Image (cartoon, rainbow, N blue to C red; front, side, top):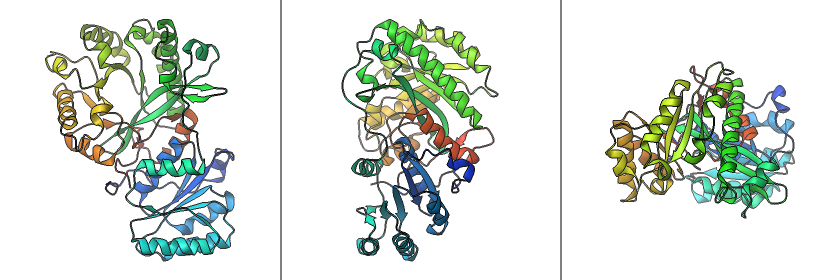
Length: 423
């Protein structure tokens, strides 16, 4: 069961100004989120943006009316507070105004109160969805979107030749937030490749990377570097400085002109945020000398290595005299249920402590449950990535999210982010 979210550092996003309306593609679904708790508003917005849906956030129903006159949302997420009068007034006003979208009530009130408000909505001929009882997990929102057929369709299964995808320019890169777990702040972004097939839709890396030729992986890695750096410039144009990251196979990394590519883009940044290249523990654990060599060649550019899928090679790392990685990224297999699993929890704690002993950053990937995020914070884990904190999304969706958060950026240029606990 999830705890109530900690207060986030985001400020409430006001209804979009007229100059912003053109930014929202009228073909893109939009949801309104009405809740006095800003951390819940931002939690929902992050999920919705990651699913290809625009959002507008409101602290109460009275501020919604101007926005409704401008654009009718597909779904309104409406909180029922201790005083249900505001929610009832909103439901009645929506009915009288002829609102045609769906209404998703959400609350931690008792079932009788929720049923009463829902019945009033039905009397107003509104499309009332089954009530969402707080606390709820990310999957509950995703299931609602799936049932309503809103947002991006799920990635397709199947196989695709990487050469064919590269030749036809089907490869694109999606961006996942990296969150400072304790400060609740967006500190970085990692790029992941996707293939957008004209018939089969979006395909995950598992569809085109396994079995790919080394030359194709080198080309993909070069594109990952260049496209992520270009995206970083777009983020910087919003006044938001994010440390960028990509995952590159070791065999490809030694053949890619990383320094030349980074130098050609880094000078275009007013403030260079630095770059992280993830290499998997399985590929590099027996080649720590090679990792040190790569690090020394790139550190003058503020380009560092991160050890991805970390955990199984702990004994080797614990004996090392130096650690040529800026980050140790916990394998998602150990992150899952780390709040309760008696095997996974100590593995996570050991890796986190090892990172800190070498004055490195510990990152947990694949965080899906609020209880796991809370456990990781208690263990001292620095950063986190995962479905709970934001799934990978196309560049334009990530920029849309950042644009709404730009007014809340911190003096150092970093953007604020959602709390790690789900509502």
